[in-house]
Image (cartoon, rainbow, N blue to C red; front, side):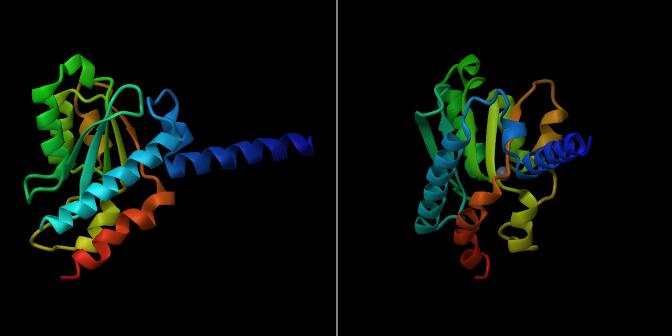
Length: 188
Ligand SMILES: [Zn+2]
Protein backbone atom coordinates (compact mmCIF):
# COMPACT_ATOMS: atom_id res chain seq x y z
CA UNK A 1 0.00 0.00 0.00
CA UNK A 2 2.81 2.31 0.98
CA UNK A 3 4.62 1.57 -2.30
CA UNK A 4 1.51 2.34 -4.34
CA UNK A 5 0.95 5.67 -2.60
CA UNK A 6 4.63 6.54 -3.08
CA UNK A 7 4.37 5.73 -6.79
CA UNK A 8 1.21 7.82 -7.10
CA UNK A 9 2.94 10.72 -5.32
CA UNK A 10 5.94 10.42 -7.64
CA UNK A 11 3.76 10.43 -10.76
CA UNK A 12 1.88 13.44 -9.37
CA UNK A 13 5.11 15.31 -8.65
CA UNK A 14 6.48 14.52 -12.11
CA UNK A 15 3.28 15.71 -13.77
CA UNK A 16 3.51 19.00 -11.85
CA UNK A 17 7.16 19.35 -12.87
CA UNK A 18 6.31 18.76 -16.55
CA UNK A 19 3.42 21.25 -16.41
CA UNK A 20 5.70 23.89 -14.84
CA UNK A 21 8.51 23.52 -17.32
CA UNK A 22 6.19 23.51 -20.32
CA UNK A 23 7.86 20.48 -21.80
CA UNK A 24 6.41 16.98 -21.95
CA UNK A 25 2.79 17.84 -21.19
CA UNK A 26 2.74 20.62 -23.81
CA UNK A 27 4.65 18.57 -26.35
CA UNK A 28 2.20 15.68 -26.66
CA UNK A 29 1.41 15.66 -30.39
CA UNK A 30 3.54 18.77 -30.98
CA UNK A 31 5.35 18.75 -34.38
CA UNK A 32 8.77 19.49 -32.81
CA UNK A 33 10.66 17.30 -30.35
CA UNK A 34 12.15 18.83 -27.20
CA UNK A 35 15.60 18.65 -28.78
CA UNK A 36 14.42 20.37 -31.98
CA UNK A 37 12.76 23.10 -29.93
CA UNK A 38 15.97 23.90 -28.03
CA UNK A 39 17.95 23.96 -31.29
CA UNK A 40 15.53 26.36 -33.00
CA UNK A 41 15.28 28.58 -29.90
CA UNK A 42 19.06 28.93 -29.99
CA UNK A 43 18.89 29.88 -33.69
CA UNK A 44 16.20 32.48 -32.88
CA UNK A 45 18.45 33.83 -30.12
CA UNK A 46 21.29 34.27 -32.61
CA UNK A 47 18.86 36.25 -34.79
CA UNK A 48 18.04 38.38 -31.71
CA UNK A 49 21.74 39.14 -31.17
CA UNK A 50 22.08 40.14 -34.83
CA UNK A 51 19.12 42.51 -34.36
CA UNK A 52 21.07 44.43 -31.70
CA UNK A 53 24.08 44.70 -34.02
CA UNK A 54 21.74 46.23 -36.62
CA UNK A 55 20.42 48.77 -34.10
CA UNK A 56 17.17 47.02 -33.16
CA UNK A 57 15.80 45.35 -30.02
CA UNK A 58 17.09 41.89 -29.05
CA UNK A 59 14.26 39.74 -30.35
CA UNK A 60 14.36 37.02 -33.00
CA UNK A 61 12.02 34.44 -34.48
CA UNK A 62 12.25 31.63 -37.01
CA UNK A 63 9.66 29.72 -39.02
CA UNK A 64 10.16 25.95 -39.01
CA UNK A 65 8.75 23.64 -41.71
CA UNK A 66 6.41 20.75 -40.88
CA UNK A 67 9.42 18.37 -40.87
CA UNK A 68 10.54 20.04 -37.61
CA UNK A 69 14.04 20.61 -38.99
CA UNK A 70 14.04 23.00 -41.94
CA UNK A 71 14.22 26.71 -41.07
CA UNK A 72 12.12 28.45 -43.74
CA UNK A 73 12.53 32.05 -42.59
CA UNK A 74 14.39 34.09 -39.98
CA UNK A 75 13.28 37.47 -38.70
CA UNK A 76 14.79 39.97 -36.30
CA UNK A 77 12.99 42.79 -34.53
CA UNK A 78 12.73 45.90 -36.71
CA UNK A 79 11.15 48.40 -34.33
CA UNK A 80 8.50 49.23 -31.76
CA UNK A 81 5.56 47.94 -33.80
CA UNK A 82 7.63 45.78 -36.12
CA UNK A 83 8.14 42.90 -33.73
CA UNK A 84 9.95 39.79 -35.02
CA UNK A 85 6.84 37.56 -34.84
CA UNK A 86 4.57 40.13 -36.51
CA UNK A 87 7.03 40.69 -39.36
CA UNK A 88 7.66 36.98 -39.75
CA UNK A 89 3.98 35.98 -39.82
CA UNK A 90 3.15 38.71 -42.34
CA UNK A 91 5.99 37.70 -44.66
CA UNK A 92 5.18 33.99 -44.23
CA UNK A 93 1.52 34.61 -45.12
CA UNK A 94 2.59 36.44 -48.28
CA UNK A 95 4.90 33.60 -49.29
CA UNK A 96 3.18 30.34 -48.27
CA UNK A 97 -0.23 28.72 -48.53
CA UNK A 98 -2.26 29.08 -45.29
CA UNK A 99 -2.90 25.31 -45.16
CA UNK A 100 0.85 24.71 -45.26
CA UNK A 101 1.46 27.34 -42.57
CA UNK A 102 -0.98 25.50 -40.27
CA UNK A 103 1.59 22.68 -40.07
CA UNK A 104 4.55 25.06 -39.56
CA UNK A 105 5.92 26.32 -36.24
CA UNK A 106 6.91 29.84 -35.32
CA UNK A 107 9.75 29.73 -32.79
CA UNK A 108 10.47 32.93 -30.88
CA UNK A 109 12.81 33.85 -28.07
CA UNK A 110 10.14 35.55 -25.91
CA UNK A 111 6.40 34.95 -25.59
CA UNK A 112 4.53 36.77 -28.38
CA UNK A 113 2.69 39.92 -27.30
CA UNK A 114 -1.00 40.23 -28.17
CA UNK A 115 -0.19 42.10 -31.42
CA UNK A 116 2.10 39.29 -32.56
CA UNK A 117 -0.23 36.53 -31.35
CA UNK A 118 -2.99 38.20 -33.39
CA UNK A 119 -0.80 38.23 -36.50
CA UNK A 120 0.16 34.58 -35.99
CA UNK A 121 -3.53 33.71 -35.66
CA UNK A 122 -4.54 35.53 -38.85
CA UNK A 123 -1.54 34.15 -40.76
CA UNK A 124 -2.80 30.63 -39.85
CA UNK A 125 0.48 29.45 -38.32
CA UNK A 126 -0.66 26.44 -36.31
CA UNK A 127 2.17 26.00 -33.80
CA UNK A 128 4.11 28.39 -31.59
CA UNK A 129 7.19 27.89 -29.41
CA UNK A 130 8.50 30.56 -27.08
CA UNK A 131 11.55 30.41 -24.84
CA UNK A 132 10.82 32.82 -22.01
CA UNK A 133 7.57 34.31 -20.72
CA UNK A 134 6.35 37.86 -21.33
CA UNK A 135 6.39 38.35 -17.54
CA UNK A 136 10.15 37.59 -17.51
CA UNK A 137 10.68 40.25 -20.17
CA UNK A 138 8.55 42.77 -18.29
CA UNK A 139 10.81 42.46 -15.26
CA UNK A 140 13.76 43.55 -17.44
CA UNK A 141 12.15 46.26 -19.57
CA UNK A 142 10.01 47.76 -16.83
CA UNK A 143 8.11 50.71 -18.29
CA UNK A 144 10.87 51.51 -20.79
CA UNK A 145 9.30 53.80 -23.39
CA UNK A 146 10.94 51.80 -26.19
CA UNK A 147 9.28 48.61 -24.97
CA UNK A 148 6.50 49.04 -22.39
CA UNK A 149 5.94 45.28 -22.15
CA UNK A 150 2.37 44.07 -21.78
CA UNK A 151 1.08 41.26 -19.59
CA UNK A 152 -1.33 39.16 -21.63
CA UNK A 153 -0.39 35.49 -22.10
CA UNK A 154 -0.44 34.43 -25.76
CA UNK A 155 -2.46 31.35 -24.81
CA UNK A 156 -5.23 33.70 -23.62
CA UNK A 157 -5.18 35.53 -26.97
CA UNK A 158 -5.31 32.27 -28.96
CA UNK A 159 -8.10 30.87 -26.79
CA UNK A 160 -10.21 33.91 -27.72
CA UNK A 161 -10.03 32.80 -31.36
CA UNK A 162 -11.57 29.93 -33.27
CA UNK A 163 -8.52 27.83 -34.13
CA UNK A 164 -6.66 25.37 -31.87
CA UNK A 165 -3.18 26.92 -32.18
CA UNK A 166 -0.76 24.83 -30.14
CA UNK A 167 1.72 26.59 -27.86
CA UNK A 168 4.84 25.25 -26.13
CA UNK A 169 6.81 27.33 -23.65
CA UNK A 170 8.46 28.60 -21.60
CA UNK A 171 11.67 26.54 -21.53
CA UNK A 172 13.46 27.50 -18.28
CA UNK A 173 16.54 25.48 -19.21
CA UNK A 174 17.33 28.13 -21.86
CA UNK A 175 16.25 31.20 -19.91
CA UNK A 176 19.78 32.36 -19.02
CA UNK A 177 20.84 32.22 -22.68
CA UNK A 178 17.73 34.02 -23.92
CA UNK A 179 17.80 36.68 -21.21
CA UNK A 180 21.53 37.46 -21.67
CA UNK A 181 21.14 39.79 -24.71
CA UNK A 182 18.43 41.72 -22.80
CA UNK A 183 20.23 42.31 -19.50
CA UNK A 184 22.65 44.82 -20.97
CA UNK A 185 20.26 46.22 -23.57
CA UNK A 186 17.42 47.46 -21.32
CA UNK A 187 19.79 49.09 -18.84
CA UNK A 188 20.64 51.74 -21.44
ZN1 LIG B 1 4.99 41.41 -30.30
